[in-house]
Amino acid sequence: MTAGAAVSGDPRFRGDGLGWVTRAVFGDERIALTVSGPPPPGHRVAARYAVVPSLARARFLLPLGAPRATAASLLAYNALRPWRVRVARAVLGVLARVGAVDLAPFPRLTVSLPDEVAADEVLLAGQLGTALGGAGVYAACGVRPPDPNHKPTLQLFAPDGRALGYAKIGWNGATRALVTAEAAALRELTTATRTPDHPAAPRLLVETAASGQLVALVEPLPPAVRGVVADAPPRIAAMLAVARRGSPPEPPRQLAGSPFLVRLSAEAEHAAASAPDGARAVAAVAALARRHGGTAVEFGHWHGDWVPWNLGVHAGRLVAWDWEHSGPGVPLGFDLAHDAFQRALVLRDAPAAAAALAVDAHLDRYGAELGLGPAARRLVADAYLLEMWLRVWRLADAGAGWNAALHPALLDVIEKRTSE
Image 1 (tube, rainbow, N blue to C red):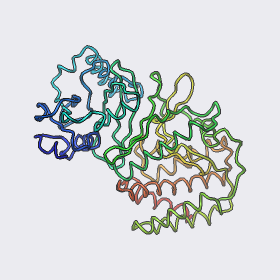
Image 2: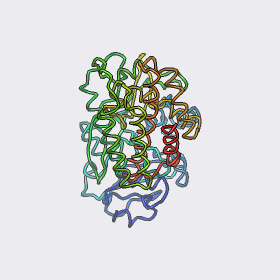
Image 3: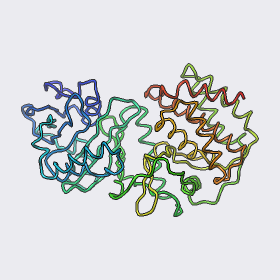
Image 4: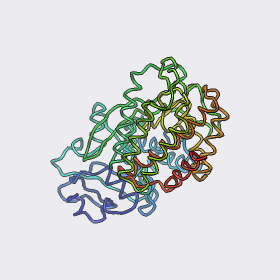
């Protein structure tokens, strides 16, 4: 960032969320960022943003220069947000429509480039606009505290306010792996056979690399999509459709000798070689095999992050997004287990032990609709919790750090369950 280093107040040198996001979005050294000041000599302005509400408490980079795009970045998909956020964005969105945000006393972030450098050469928004056919693009971006598990996301809009796509940025080992996985899942869904019960999913528009980052540009959701009720019953038919991908049910097979158990064993061995608690995972896989090896279950795909905040409804059909943890070859019922675990963990702030009990309760209540008998439900619950700990390890091993809510507490829960 040699150009930025010469500019006083370049936010990329901050240690907060604004610094983290601007480093990810404006990573090329030729880009200069200035806050409430002119660009450096020899540079031309490429974009301007309002930093909302302030530099110290930045929550949003709001594009300026096209009132309809500015308003759309605040109002699009507002129905999916918590009501307090919805109200604040609605007020700002109305002001943006009449150009009042340009006059508001928010700090201004100016993005500028050397005169000889083209915007589509170094600016991510410019590159993605070119990939979309050369359309003029205005990019908005949320700001949150730095977190190695999270991906900055650019919301791209045309000057007239039409949503063009959402660009997810993989900036470290963990998030690059997630972006790659979601791109692969969306490509596969494009060609997979899907029954009417299968949820709709956004299409992958562009997958690219920029300044050492991986970027997946995903189709915008339907404008009229509405969120699902957080405590609504699970969508069993949709989970089955995701698991089977339009194919007949796979014959149940025993856990012992299954590719799923082979994968768990291999990942646990890798964890043992890289993490102090990894040997506990090896023992947990062995205990899972002893306890449930003779139990037969159906295997199939799963969404991988089936939770109310990743689901919506449009025109009477379920819509699912954020497929970055999707994959094949897991016991049928994993999405049902994940739904219960995350509702407890996130919505009720439950500890790992209580969230595990919520998995048991959810499977006991709804598992029969998936064809799961008592033994299969116990296998699904125990295997899912082990899968979740291995996910926590994979992210930590890729540089994201340990999830304090799940490590080592989830290993403690797993060991207690498999020793009973």
